[in-house]
Image 1 (tube, helix red, strand yellow):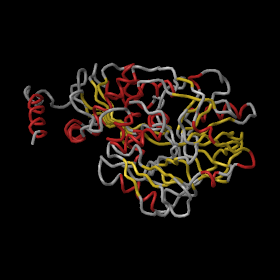
Image 2: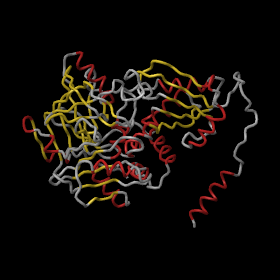
Image 3: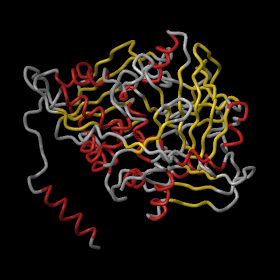
Image 4: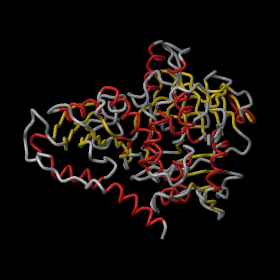
Amino acid sequence: MAYDDLRGFLSALDDEGQLLRITDEVRPEPDLAAAANAACRIGDGAPALWFDNVTGFTDARIAMNVHGSWPNHALALGLPAGTSVKDQVEEFARRWDMFPVPPERREDAPWRENTVEGADVDLFRILPLFRLNDGDGGFYLDKAAVVSRDPRDPRHFGKQNVGTYRLQVTGRDRLAIQPVPMHDIALHLRAAEEHGEDLPVAITLGNDPVMTIVAGMPMGYDQSEYEMAGALRGAPAPLATAPLTGLDVPWGSEVVIEGVIEGRRREIEGPFGEFTGHYSGGRRMPVIRVDRVSYRTDPVFESLYLGMPWTEVDYLVGPNTCVPLLKQLRAEFPEVQAVNAMYTHGLAVIISTKKRYGGFAKALGMRAMTTPHGLGYVAQVIVVDEDIDPFDLPQVMWAMSAKVNPQEDVVIIPNLSVVELAPAASPAGITSKMIIDATTPVPPDVRGNFSTPARDLPETKEWIGRLQSLLGAR
């Protein structure tokens, strides 16, 4: 089933027992973030959380942990809640091949119900803001989809970017944004600033669940997130036109914030507890001037807690990082079998592959680091044989322990780019990267003693199915 808005998805989660309504009065800080933090500590089946009785707020409706479990992630894709992680990734990959699916334009967007402009804009009045970690430098919008266009080619639909970036509320009509240099919006901003212009943006909050997934997805520069959303939904993504900027935005958003990133203006933003499990310090970041806010009556404010993994963000960006890397690598190296980029937004990646010749695995690891996502994120690559499931960590650790000769199979490459948020980077944005070749050597590489491997018995697969059926029938 394809959900056109957040409210439809929340209703479906409720029907599936995957939405927990907190009816007791709670404090905005620390209760909201602490509850979402706790949800991800109680197991892989954690529910989304709904709060509508928050001290100090009138009629606030706040949703947390919406994507924060594998059942919720499966339901977002229209799959049964019990779909395994591996099957979710495989289905994600199958739908990727349906790309592109053109969007569908609609005129009656529910976020048009209320509008404030100019001097009347006050984000503190419209949104129930709260800090996510006690060391954050302010209030953040951390689950928004930000839309921008390439100023050099504004009519190219595919170059219109929809991305997730952290946004700090710095004033009633001001936001600070962190555009990672490798991301599309940073390229758009640079092009605008080179011509002495501001960059129009639309910030959408409370989006349908698939739109949120694709907004954090590493795609090609000219590939449309809206057309990918259609492929993942199995139906065209509904769009509307933002009235001030003319940007294409999701039809079902709860809130649409329009304005411009002011060219060549920077202000201190941060610190913020990030997906790395560490705070990032204050840095000078671009500033957004908000000119118009449109919103549904009684909007649902969606946020996510992020900190030491696993948190909601890890469920949200895990499969949507694995599959693009798999497809991009397999296009050049058809030997690639699977990619596990679940860990810290793909800073660490495990790849299983067949080999053509000695040294193949190391070459594959270097290519992973130079994909669009790898340039900013992939810092550690473990390459394993095709009979190793990269999602089965005991198998991966066996390959590491049995097949790695550290002197020859661990490659360190210095002074490569990485996202500035990576805690181990020194200086920020620069790191050494590592490839661990945990594959069996093939000619002309004849090192080691791997001639007679012990493999699963031929009947093992059949017995797995029999045992699972017997256990399910108990």
